[in-house]
Length: 251
Image 1 (cartoon, rainbow, N blue to C red):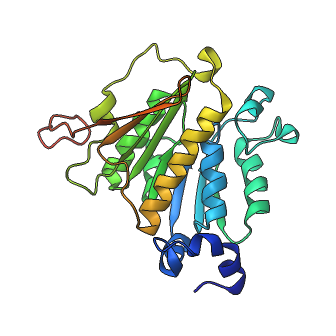
Image 2: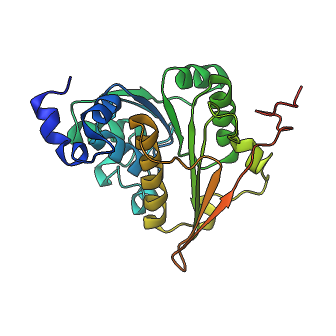
């Protein structure tokens, strides 16, 4: 049940007919894994904690650097030098002491990633490199867990939801294949802060929809954001039967 304090804390959300008491209870009993606590993971963690998702698993092996503060809004100047997980724990506890926070401070290998995915209901990939995204996708496909994937660099962002529970849903590998060895990071190409905030906020929204059970998730669709012109474009994405990760024809 929801306590009087929880009813008051989440009252504006509960007022929505798509959420109501039942949806809020589903959020309270839900568990989410956030991979990466940088520009994308910051708004994801803040909004999911504030919304009352009962258990957040926070995974990041990096420490806070001064250059992070332009966009990674969960951290502050006093956090510089701390692990991003510890910095996030402090901020999220201050925002909502009602939820449970689980820390993953070490880099996740294949086994620990599989275990982390198995222990949650939804995974949000907020990492900044292709190898991590590929590993997270493979773990989600193997574990049958929905994956909300976001990315942003320079003035361009993108977002999609991959749900292996749905027969028609592609996976990350269907869309991006083996990626590119020349893929740039934000530290090399730059990024504007509000863009990662926008993509991360949309990732959090998709997570709330999946966990509370309302709306139409971004499954089979890729949302492209052009921050320079403030234009949004949507592409349909189909599952690849020959995909080496999720394909029915593989193996």
